[in-house]
Length: 397
Ligand SMILES: Cc1ncc(COP(=O)(O)O)c(C=O)c1O
Image 1 (cartoon, rainbow, N blue to C red):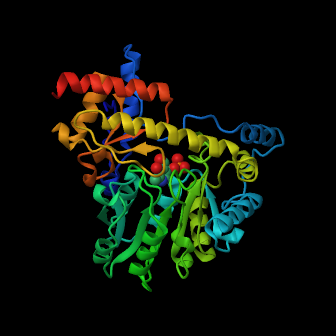
Image 2: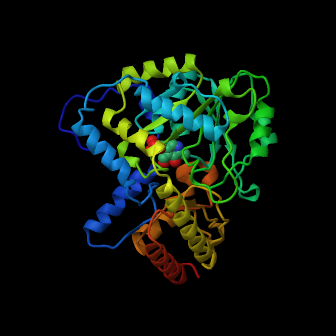
Image 3: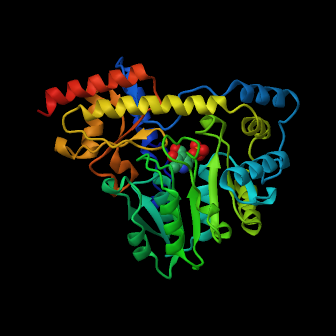
């Protein structure tokens, strides 16, 4: 970017290690193309295309009029922490008390705070690759060593527990799990999670369990490592409202962790955000305690779209796609096109008008794949399939 000042930016060295989320860059590029008059189908960004349920919106509006417009406690409103404790206790089958809950603006800050709280220079963090890019970015930022555990298609993108065990060293401070998984849609089974827990054994290693897609599961059931006996006090469970209730722009998520750690994470909140917006939290209570039908409907709709989109991709020459079991992403293998992922994603955006992400936006082990979000109408998904097929017919055969 051009600057008009004579003062050079003397940034801290760590800034050069901070990564980003390509989805936002691709979205910006797609918007530029749209401004030029091009029609683009957006399958790049990871957010539900549904409206936030109306009972939640109404609760927020009422809360604004009722004066929930001031600072609140850094750890979150007591009533919301209680509601979350009950919800997690019920769904993960573990006793959770409100002082084990910290409410934060979105799920992301729990990643940020966990890494800040635990990772010193050269401490090792094992994280899924391909995986949500913020894990690696944050570990690098604080000077830790990001150790990838590859997720492979032939295992349905579940991690290989033997390989995980071989990566654990005396310097391993944190292991990051994410199920249902972004970008592959893979879901870890109860058995796989129990095996991960067994591989960790009695070591003093913390687990950040990113469960932001816990309610978007199409086959099987969600299982948390927090539910494994003996693991609760080493687990930081991340969940939130963004994906479950189509509330990405509201910025509200939470971490569940032992109370002594919750006190430290609360201090990080005091130092960074002070608190999560108060009226948003009041709406959060209604989201968790109110009618859950919108969540079920949204999940059923994602499943219909997933089925249609995966079937469509598998008809396109050079593409082959497994059926993801959760989240709202599909992750086709494109190696038979002969194109590298990034180049193909760029060509699909620029030439075919379909915005998607290169698998490499999620780490080096994403090479050979693309990520499409099915958070778009069936009509647009079908149109995208047509445009891709048309482009492939003209350019790859
Ligand atoms: C795996 C994963 N974790 C965390 C987040 C962050 O969610 P939020 O928008 O609530 O910060 C995302 C968002 O895309 C995600 O995919």
